[in-house]
Length: 242
Image 1 (spheres, helix red, strand yellow):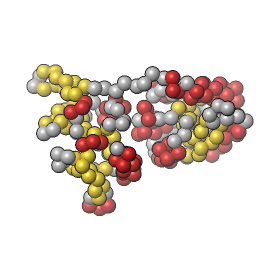
Image 2 (cartoon, helix red, strand yellow):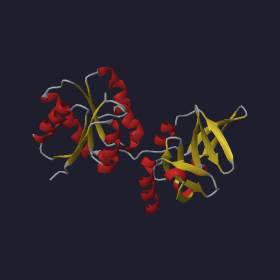
Image 3 (spheres, one colour):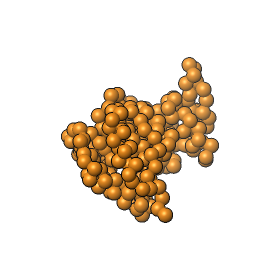
Image 4 (tube, helix red, strand yellow):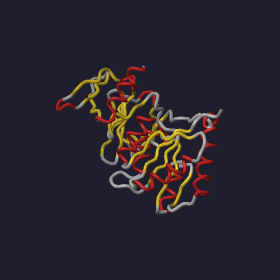
């Protein structure tokens, strides 16, 4: 018997969530893992429930569907079928590797077609070629281009439009988004502890409670970086697993 597909439904409209639930109820081999009505709820549910597929509304108050994917990281997302009343987001959706894109109101046949596409991707997920992560990062130094091996990077922090690579006692500035760097780095080695900081896990010396109930990591070179509350528990798990 084929593995069951665990589905998360995200939409700020109760009737829209109910419609997808009703359509999924007609399908065999599908389990509804949960529902969410906001982008923040979706992020927590994806991290906590680990669904195989998400029906993700694009337009929601606060964080929208695109924000959800960018917060989690495209490489860490389950399969995604975007749903929205606006088709202008289609290009962005497929840039984020969506399985399909349903424009409301969609009929039953179109829904079944999208679900079939997701099932096929799910069944063949282990046949996908293993993703290759970057091993070198080009930087400009005094007008010359040089390459920094990723293995030498202790941490990366955001600084305005730049990201700063911390390599021992040296710092290199590159014009790159933190989100892009996060997706290009091996998640088994690097972890984003804050929206403005990515660290190499084996460079962390201690995780400690800072002032005001916040947390921070101390790296082996003595550098301290803040840990966002939403990432602390996952960071603790990652450190215990090492």
